[in-house]
Each structure stands twice: as structure tokens, then as C-alpha cells.
Length: 319
Image (tube, rainbow, N blue to C red; front, side):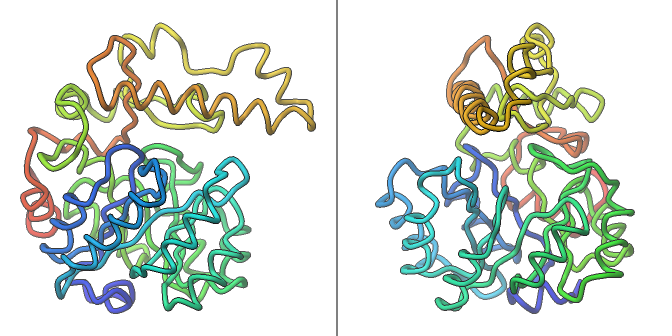
């Protein structure tokens, strides 16, 4: 597992604990670093810039050899906090930034000045070539087995296409729940993997036990794609509530989304409503259960410490 990603981040195993909205926290990342992988947190998990700054300081103080940490930034116009979050991250410093849902140009420019590497989420070759030309240090290849916002291509086809046309490392995101899956992604040419859903049911995750237990009780066949969280296809567990409300946009949303002037505002409103529902489900017991997860929860059989989950990923093929 001594890949370019492992060398770039000086980690023992080429694994990134993926940034998960409302789920990821410093306790999870600290455990990730202690056990030889990288951890990442969405900057949007923090309500204020001061909270974000304190998290950066805590992670720097807890960093150990063989581990690294980073933050995820939503870099499109829907995130009004983006530029101020980027400023704080560059001031305090971290090992890497993962960009999502927009152009990473400004992030790459500012992060490289601060000595921070930038990895960019992509779902196709066209965008991969763009971010490589902008100076990205690696590509996060988001495939159709990813949890949350996913791509349309299979892991094999996406990795092989990107590897054959790009010179920077390709990190596969989606479809990894055990050691065998990691080895499969590396055999396609990936230099590492980004793993999220298997870490939801961890003792360190700051979400409800109901959310964690759902990742134990449900499996790959229970994951569906919905348009009702952010307006962009997103994978969730098919709970009774999700079945009740459906997974498609409403008729009026579909009409408004065809209007170029209104489309951005419709997406922002849908994002706000969807994120509130997701937050309520993650942080407190509610019948409105909208739990984001990917098919790799298939391998989650119990709620376990981060250390045990990592050990399973790197040494064992089963729970």
C-alpha cells in the first residue's frame, strides 16, 4: 500500500476518512491519524469561523507520524462562507483540502501559498483535466457507489479513464467497505481510497444512535438516490419516511429548474431545506429520518470504535 498518496501525506495506509456533513468531527480524525490514515472534516460542520479555527488548532496538536488531516470546502456560490473558511484554514494550516461542487482555482492558489495540498472531487474526465491544469495535487474520483453526492460511472471505468489521461494521483471515492475493496481499487490504478459510510456507525461519530444503528440494520440494497436534499442526486437510506416523500423533485421544482435565472435560487432553497432535514435526523430522534449513506454500509455489522473499523479495512475482509 505504499502508493503516491501514502507518500504525499506520509500516512501508513493510502486511506482518507472521507469528510461527511454533520458526521465527521475531530475525535474521528484524531483516531484516524493515530491508526495510520488521513482524516477530513467538512468546514461546513462548524457554525462559526472561531469553531473552525479551534478545530484546526486541536488537530495540529494531536497529529502523529503516519497520519494526516484536512478539510473539505464547498467552493461554489451556494456556500457564502467559502472564502472566509479558506482564509482561516490557510492561516492555521493543515495537510490537505478537498474541494467539492465548483471551481477549485482560488483554493489551489491560496492553499499552495500556505503549503497545503489540494485534492479535487471529480465525476468525469473533463473536470479532472481542468483541475489538473489548475494545479490540483490529486483527483478524488467520485463513482456511482459513493455515499452522499455520487457520480455516474462505475469505480473501474472511472479510475481507469482518469489514470490513462491524468498524471496526478487518482483517489477512488465510493464502494469501499473492506480490505478486498481497497485492493480492487488499487488494482484499477487508484493511488488511494476515500472511505466514508463505514465510519458513520463508530463510537466517535457525533450522530444519534438511531443513525448509527440504521447503518447496521440496513444494507446496500436499501440505498436509494434522492433529489430532495440538495437538488443534486444524493444517496440515502430508504427509510419509511424517504419512501413516503419520494425521491424526485416536485413538479414545480422541475419547472423552475428549467429557468436559467431561477435555477440557482431553487437549488439554494432546496439545499437549505434538505440540509435542515438531514441535520435533524442526524442530531436528534425524529420520524423524519433522512440518513445519508452509501452502499458500503453492507459491511457494517455493529457500532465499533474507529480503530477497529480501520483495522478491518487494512487487515481483514470481514466484520
